[in-house]
Length: 589
View: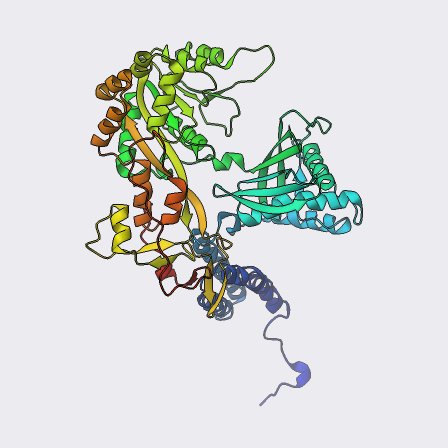
């Protein structure tokens, strides 16, 4: 019987095959440990469950690689392919589930873009060789702003300039402002988060001016011009995140002011079905649009979604079968298939009202007029041919009734104003409760009565939290950053104007018009807000903040009371223990 000696031993597996199998496995394990595990922990996505899922996927992948039921050399390559597919499937599955979870803000969604990752790494490497910065700033020419060397005054200005954007990202802000405080030449920063201004840090005047000059220079604006209103765009990049920032600088009594709007186009892009209209209101709006004649008022206070609704409603008309145009002073987004006419103020050009008249004389099917700066504009619209053109006029007012009154006053002729008016829509924005930390409570019968809600059966409402319990220890909610709210949604009132309403408008009978609108049983802004409170989308406190009493306003219910804190509740901020089932309620969306 022949026996093999040690020198005659055979290698049963090539040495390079295990090394090749390690490459995808190590890459997968690195992503899981360095990215996914931290991501799940940060947003409370059941970290333990996902670790079990990842571990199981890894074991299955290894088993598939070494136990592939194929003979010969093909077994190795088939096993390698199976391993790659399983590991990649695990990575994609987590990303898809996490990106759909409401607790994960959109800017923290997991995206696979190797080109951007490679570019970000190159930028980081370049930054390390110079001063350490977190942002890549690109001007209109797409060229990156050079990074100053460390320990220089220019680098300190760059760091202070970046801090405005970084704080804005941290706060989920839509706008950041830097302006004089009026005290000792100091400047203060502030951030607009879900429509509410949040105070930032103070900055010495000399530093603030240099920061403003830096951003103006990045946008290729005239740095020496410190009085006129100047607007420009820059792009800032942070790792794989990319933001477009619209800069507006202007002179004020105490110095210069800088406003930075983040992703202005994204802020106004929303489909009509996503605005927040209730079912009856959407049906009324569709009826007004199908009418296709006359003029419709679109009203909202400043920073209450007026431009978003203006664009969404104009886009409800088919721009490929109709001649749809807009008249705007500062377009916020490009509308596909729609001709946007920008009015350039100043110079020797026509007045705004003359500009609007020239557009209307071209016989378009639909015209959206973004502003009514003077009475002359209203008079030009009142003289339009109502049988051939639909006009949407955007106004800054609080309610549909106030918008109608402002329209009639501007035209100066109630009969002419009523003749062309076919509808009125008004809106406000309220903040949505953070579903990760909102706190449920049982309202009292007295509160429900004041809200106008039947108290014959128990109801559960929600209020803002701001904290969550993690291992029985209260911590700031990672989703809302302790604010208690995430995102905004519109509350509306929509009224078509027919002959009965037109007759009351001619007569200036506003109380009669209010009563006539009530007969229509269409929700008002206050009723729409109350519906969203009862559905758990927002809180009574937010309802009170947004729907203040409106003198001369549209039909409304009495103001709702502020909910008392539970007797056992401490004076500290409310804390919600994290539980997906407990924190989520039926959504009105």
